[in-house]
Length: 605
Image 1 (spheres, rainbow, N blue to C red):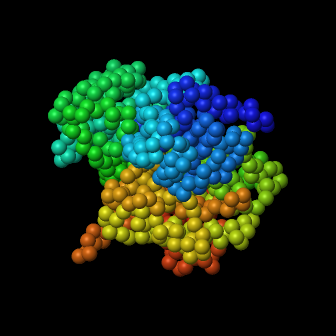
Image 2: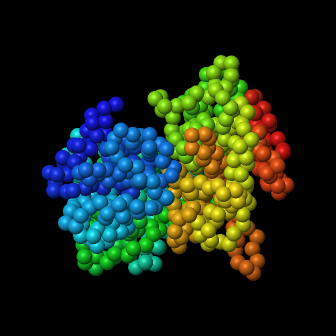
Image 3: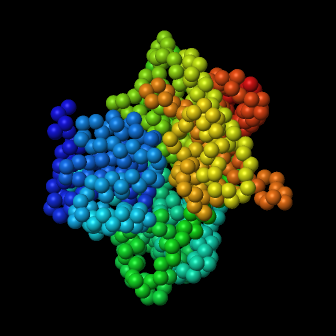
């Protein structure tokens, strides 16, 4: 490829020309939108458009003479390949929350130069950190313009998918009760108004769902909640008359999406606005008048939705059963076809998705299926494409020995699923079986942990890593993320990772979190074993309240990949108990080949 005329280089040339016309020396393009979403509508995927990097997280910085993309270890192999020939430097950062791009900008820009960034998509907390560093370096930050407008004529329009209600029985708590809960928290903070911009908070609060973001049943909007009413700012064509009347009955008025900033500008003097600096953008914060007192605290809905009610937990268990049944059907087909039919990573993803789509209450996948054979499994967020994918088997045999990693999940009316399993193809090597077993030991160790209520999630991270650390091994992503209730598959505030501890990360009853340690050998294979777990109350005494994990995910963990010599008797007992539960819960939902596969794969060690 002639790199001088590559599409990305030509797009960067156009972007640099637009910067010169605006009097800016550099531009910052985060992976973000006005709602600080993880998964973005196409309209805000500027970082991907101007870099070619398709990962869900990353930051692009473009200067007149150089450009850099900042990505964490989940994406290093992928980014290196996708940036090849673009002239964009890959800067490897240690974690998602790293601010390495700030230090890079301070070093790259001279005093008196200008950095442009769209304040409408720049998180308030991140903007405050960036501005502080640039001010100290004598660099001007301009945030009142959209740097992409003139350079991206192909930009997609905003999505316009209609809203729908998440109804009872699955929506077990009425909208009015959730609004009352939030207003009680507002009163405790002395706030008269509360701004909600994050899409999962908004969908949870109003018991509404949409389709503006792939794989997450959310919609673009903001809400301004007062003591007596609420305004929902949204594309008005998305709300039909019947839904508009239903919302009005609960004191929710529908207003145009574009009026959000004006509503903030016209808040009455002397009022107090509660907002979350980690969940609101700089642009919206700057619209608030000085005469309005701002109270910075975590969104009350973020904490509330993380703690699933008993009714919601019951529906999640049902969703896990139908999800597990779908996987039994898929894996029975897969093992029968392996070595007899042409199987690729693409056909695996297609067939598994089709099995889930047949289940009652199914709405969509919760993220694109990750099916990675051998070297592709070493990229944690790999996604097969028609242009780049591996063949697993052909008629007459498999395409070599190894491991197939499959990470998948779905959105059901009664819950969100996310599960990773690794399956042997041919005869895995002793080194593969050793890696697999060490990761399994980490999954088991954390799954059976008991801990004091309120323990910060990051304090549990080392438990899953300990078996790997004992062998001088590690993995670059977090051990666990929160999961929504028919909402985003990645949900805060809790996390099991090496994050800096914050008060809202305290583990509380009702939270659903993933446990997913991994081990990745670049260019060879990857292992990750993931279950979702529910925080439940454990026996307590004078030392305080304790919590334990209930494993929710129902799918056999392949025992053919295990190096039995590395497992202790207690670990074997845990695995046998888990498989007995999986067999008991899924047997009523399976028949024929799927039932036979379930019986075979849940035999005791």
